[in-house]
Amino acid sequence: MPRQIVTRILTGLLVLWLAASAAFVAIHALPGRIEDVLAGDLSYPGLREAIAAQWGLNHSLPWQYGRFLLRLAHGDLGTSFVMQQPVLAVLGSQLWPTVQLAVSAGVLAVALALLVATSTAGLGAGKGAWATRIASTLELGFTSTPVFWLGMMLLIAFSFQLRWFPVSGASGWRSLVLPAVTLALPTAGILSQVMREALEAALDKPFVTTVRARGVSELSLRVRHVLRHALLPVVTLGGWLIGSLLGGAVITEKMFGRPGIGSVTLSAVTSQDVPVVLAVVLLAAFVHVLMSTLLDIAYLFIDPRLRSQ
Image (cartoon, rainbow, N blue to C red; front, side):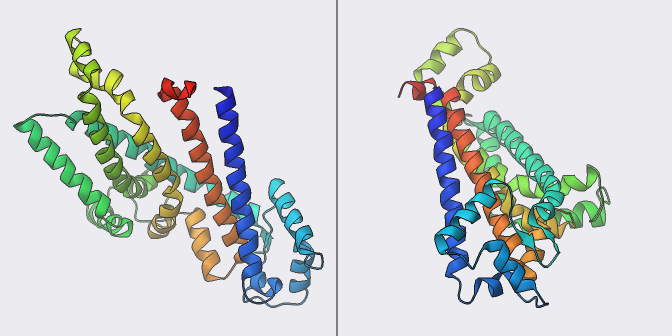
């Protein structure tokens, strides 16, 4: 198993290198001079000379590529000439609010999916069938609902009407509730659908009859025995969805007036701050690669059969 873990880590590093290389190629493939692309609409004395010196544009392309990778390896993401400070400082000051939002939404989505799927999977006719139909309808509704529309409905109901939560710009846990729910509900809808199908398939396995014959309760059967057999497809999809929460945070943070990477990204796109946009793209690639690598390692602990392959 250690060899498999090392292989997956090296594969993740390879994907990060390819993502960084693609970003470098994209910058140099844009029409016009690199100085003009990175400067955007800014124009003041010495700006383009500073960009040329930072990126080494007076050297050969392989030298620039090597310098670009070396800077990334040292955490140097360049300078935001619009905000007049290093990109790492710009993102670092806004990263924690986004992490709070993404983690809260991810935990809430997984908890809701577990609760709904384990309580409705494999139910027979009667009240159980009605519970499954209601759960499936809600899952389909939340999955099909755009994030911005769901956020607006939550704001109208719980901020404008009931006044339980602040509208925007506040701090503390109460300001995190509505944005986290907005991001969590669509993710929970997809996860719950996949988890229920996997649980129902696992409930048809022969080992379930043996476990029931031992007098194990239905809740213990589902949580301790069946859930583990149904986790692989759920973990695969869940990792991708949780990794993509960074994209959903762009709209949600702006809607609820929260600080974070989303607000920085929109401001950078509006002001044509290319170094910041490039850094956000690389950050998103890093998050997805990190989640994928962690999931590959988690598979080895969830399914013992993978350790012997």
